[in-house]
Amino acid sequence: MKATGIVRRIDDLGRVVIPKEIRRTMRIREGDPLEIYTDREGEVIFKKYSPIGEMNSFAQQYAETLHKTCGFGVVITDRDGVIACAGVPKKEYFEKRLSADLEKISENRSPYRYQNGDRKLAIIDDASGTHFISCAVPIIADGDLIGAVVSAMSDETDKSARDELRGTDVEYRLVQTAAAFLARQLQ
Image (cartoon, rainbow, N blue to C red; front, side, top):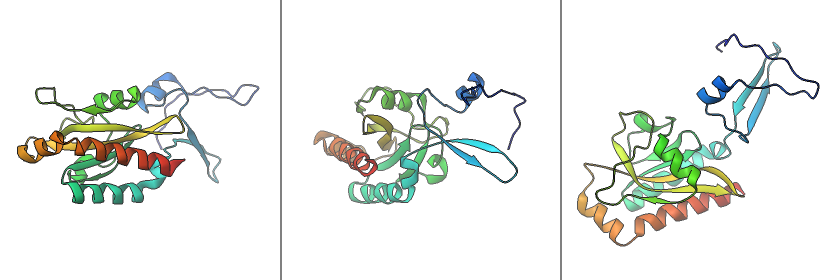
């Protein structure tokens, strides 16, 4: 655990303010759920809660099945990072922070589809990512933004396969179905 040097007092209602610098660094937004842990030494630990994070193994199996069935890379995220992926280098993507572009797509709560000539949007915050967003659909459960399902393409992806998927809207419908299915599992 890392000391910040910041000390806050608890008010008469039992509240404590998490400093803006820490909220910004940890990407904690207003309304985000936090889990509270305690240990025997008297430490109280706040951890960001991810509802879909509890479904990691299920999300991973779903991503692998979708990838094997359709052939495109699949990335499943919570609001902050990648929780499951298939068809993309796992070391490169798993548990990495989302790019600002993907966060914006999710927060807008509307699907995104790459069109030829568009700027290629990164999936993760790290510039080393080799894939870009082909299609992204936010996961929304009970009106709350949970994450997103992303189909990933790279420049090396077979252009004819990419065009075939996009031409029939199959890719979009599959990603949309995956997002709806995962949202239903969280309700």
